[in-house]
Length: 424
Image (cartoon, rainbow, N blue to C red; front, side, top):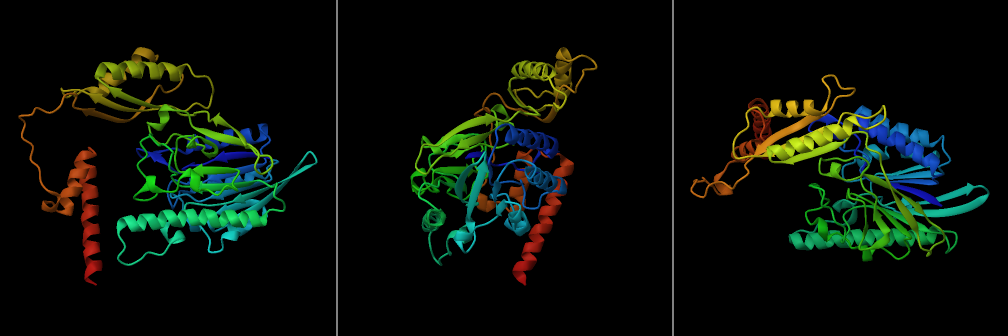
């Protein structure tokens, strides 16, 4: 049976408040073509379908359009599980209707773990096959344990880790009990950080406070022939085990991720216990993300190369690349936007066929360490008010005066509201 393993779509994502819908639309359209070309039997989406819990109508439309178009293919079934960015209730809302179409959605863990086990049967060219899927979504603390009064943070983390492991053990046993024969393979999904994985792509949101202390690859039950993981955006096997894999995100979500290919994975599963073969399929990039960091001369050289690469790309659906510029300098460059624009014109014609590049962020950072003699005023955290801390955060984020004033007003309103709640 042939399976498409994909995850971490993050539909509705915005990069520096810029809409990503065209990129996601292009990626999903390519995915539909891949499903047809590769004769996919089962589609697995291992969490983080959406970027926020209340996604835009455009993001929802992309999701439901993709599911509806699967019905016109030879795909036998699709399994979608919720991630930490998804709203379980929103994903699960139409699950009964979708289930009748062999589109199975598990937005959150269920009280009866058996209901997370899905049996899929295919009949391609007269050959009948069966697959059991243990559909495990992102597991929140309330899904796996009850908090205990007076427990320490370490005890809490140990309890969470054990609860996650117990959930996989329980659903593994349920999957084994469900299959019609011992030769029927079992695939499990998961949306979590598994010990042994590496995530060096500037990803700042993790599952729990002690993300690296989630379960290890060896904690998965041996009955799982393949574990389709999501949450880590870098495609990889875990601890060298080829049957436990992250497929990677569908589009780059940061400029750091834009430095490497995004991918999905095609998995071929035979009988239970037999080696599983899989291969990485790079996702074509509709919009390049360029991270231009260094001295001014280095940034200009990288910019020329980026513009030349974009203008030489072939295809009608290529989107304007975005760039993040960070110049290292000891002298403030007051005309940085003008210098960057002039550098673009060195490569692009006055009226190029397509827009050469768009700068989403420009910043300057000190190249040399601050002089040792320069006194720096420091305060302990307990000497600062919440408003003081928030103002320092605004300064660190280099917000404009107008934006900083607006968000500071909102922050003060939030503090006042919280104080009113505490006084009630």
